Image (cartoon, rainbow, N blue to C red):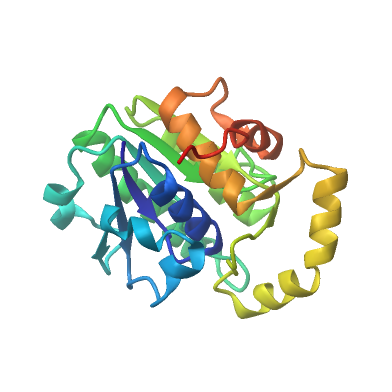
Length: 236
């Protein structure tokens, strides 16, 4: 299986990258981002021995990927884990960074690889009606709807809620990283008490791989679905 990954430097993206590199059925991972992975990332994730599978493309204009057409052909799945916080942003700006970027990638990939499975990381509480009062939820809902309308073999909208980072992974946002570090024990406790509602970076990565491999019965994949999909461990 050959995979294109967006957002490999983020918390979710790092977890997905780790699982992709460790999965023996994944033969190639193409990471698309504005910058290279920080030195030592693969070693920290425990996937350094599989680094030969990984190729990185640095691209600055996420509203236009036409220059990458030759690099994007022949892939089986795309995991779009890139996202930004809506805090402090106008709806117009947030929509550009969320909807426009995802559709620029999805539109081109659907044309080049119609047999592809496209998985988009959205979030719990996303508004599929696009009419609610919460700005980020409306924009995410519109993004999901537009991606589902593209002619992929299959598309799944992942909606994780609370996420426990594993394998030394921390968010790029410094303050969120501090918060997760200080509340780590609480997240572990909540996951033990409510395993269907708290997921991990490992489970998200494995769930994406299993959905791409075997399909799934739901287009909108909630936290409890991720828990179900991610139960199959990587077989070395």
